[in-house]
Length: 142
Image (cartoon, rainbow, N blue to C red; front, side):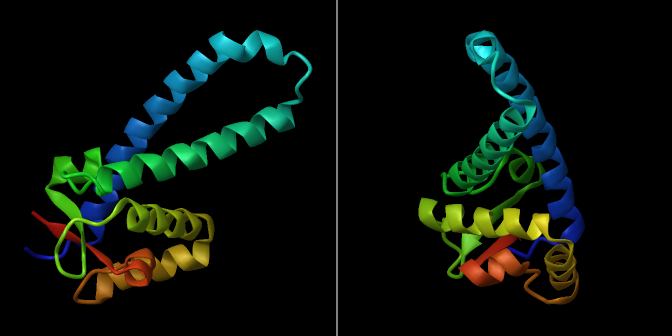
């Protein structure tokens, strides 16, 4: 079981981005049909904020539920034969998966942290990004 490098992790995230985007479109359509007409007096800024919060929650839950499952990885990770493990090579808990993905989401929001994460995955032997180092996880090839 070797560590998964940058490009395979990037490709998995790209696949997951497609899955999440489709989910957001379907969820947005459902919400628009179900409650859209009752929100006539809500501002665009409020709707935007609601959308961002829902997107954050969807992102965290998607990855945390998938990575803490018996599959140990998201759709993208499963498609490319990689999974998330703890320091002993075992399945991670839901709590650790939540923490891992909150830190990952924050690192995606701040370009400097993102660059450091990418550099770490590229240069260190264990291919661990900042979120993996902080929560004691690794992404490995199956």
